[in-house]
Length: 332
Ligand SMILES: *[C@@H]1O[C@H](CO)[C@@H](O)[C@H](O)[C@H]1NC(C)=O
Ligand SMILES: *[C@@H]1O[C@H](CO)[C@@H](O)[C@H](O)[C@H]1NC(C)=O
Ligand SMILES: *[C@@H]1O[C@H](CO)[C@@H](O)[C@H](O)[C@H]1NC(C)=O
Image (cartoon, rainbow, N blue to C red; front, side, top):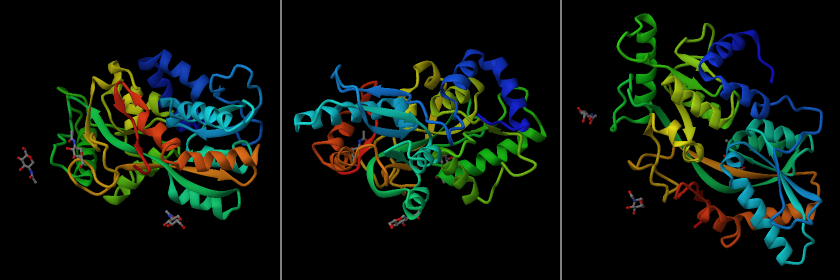
């Protein structure tokens, strides 16, 4: 990963706190600079067919790969295809956030990208790198933070109330550091991921740009993948934006120290949160089909299967983490 010198200092500082977590994430799962060389898959799935050798479908994604959703799609789709007469084949998962995944499509290193930014997806289609997109499932953003709740977020706060309180309390704590509680800090993914884009939109919507020079010191820039970022927020008692998939995929030791302050815990509806508010914290995941694919028939078939009620949508419905359904199907 490319880090400018502004990043290095806080990361070195953090590594004192997080030790092994940093060491592991900086080798195995940090966002790699991947533009030219052929990217190595994070995992290869064969649907249980040990004789499947040829990889005919490459799926790029970040969070849903880490949660196991991509694996569930891959294995179910291989079985479905073999059931229809295909020779067993394998499907690879290529690790990348939204920006990277669409980059893999453009570089012809992925056949499908599962991404979370309508504007970026539209741009990929407009550029000719991809040809089609379909809503795959809906994830949900969660604004989470420490139990100590130094910004005093309340149940009846709106999303913009919460963002304003974090900014005000963060600034106040920088001016006069508290001695009896952790200071209010916000951990930013700061990595161009869809979550980073969403958190930036939330700050901009209240007229704030804490990342601008000179950046607000309560705004903690932590460019890592979702699981690592949530773990850091937990260890450091910081607020952050995460998603339900990452939340339920995280160890209890991580989530026990945190509270969900905003976002739908009841995910039966795709249009409102628990309080009936608008869908500002919804995180729709879209499948984007590359113009050039490893195997056109398989890629086209995957797109159709993914949106079908008894295909990919049933896999979404059945996909659970710790006894809870992770994502909302695109259609029910
Ligand atoms: C993306 O394209 C779709 C279909 O053309 C359009 O409805 C939507 O508003 C666009 N979204 C963005 C964010 O550009
Ligand atoms: C929100 O809840 C708090 C505590 O229950 C209460 O004091 C406050 O008046 C409420 N605010 C609004 C706008 O309802
Ligand atoms: C979840 O939302 C559905 C639909 O709005 C509602 O019928 C149900 O009671 C809710 N469940 C919980 C646990 O709040």
